[in-house]
Picture 1 (cartoon, helix red, strand yellow):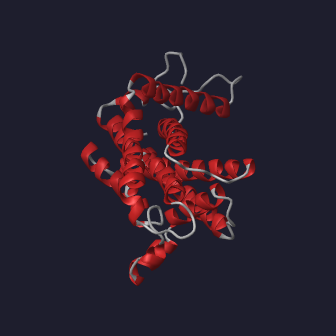
Picture 2 (picture 1 turned 90 degrees about the vertical axis):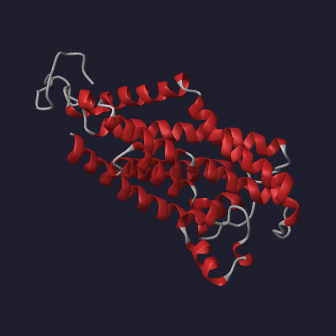
Length: 271
């Protein structure tokens, strides 16, 4: 985003600065803007932490004793699922934030200056990933405080972080797409809830083997379950097998579709 008094996206920028430089600069400015919202609106972080923390405490102390997950303590089984759920909390806030920018005229002001079309959406996506990262750190700390005892190596933790951040990035792009498709903030919130509740039909809380056959087949093969199972195996020092590769392939593919679709939707409707 330049400081020159330019209007309209067709205005040429100085030759000494390339389009790539300006695209990076525009994205950094918008990323900074949306990250500032986190410090100025701490309720966003509180909301992102409240539900996964409540679920962790509820299942750990109320329901955990009634759920059999085999040879490991239920809290060790539960925490990886809670980490995935904490990432999905970015879905509603990202969808609503994108739609709010469209409804409140923020994008109209951006259109009056020379700015990369991708900057608005990328700013929201990066802010969502940062919120997810903060939530993940908090949930790991809370999990350890209530009895979670991971057995993974340092490399396993690095792989867990990479898997969850890939998941957060892809999910944020999907949420941004839903925010662009929605016609109101309420509609965006409703669409975001679909993503937020996707881990509830996964292996986050119970083993798929305990479910009815039809539901079991869906739970075992849906992409969120792949993330949960990968994170759980890595944190508990168990064999990952092909599950990790399948999880990465699924969410790289989703990211590869969602990012260009969101960018195109934004360009067609608002650029």
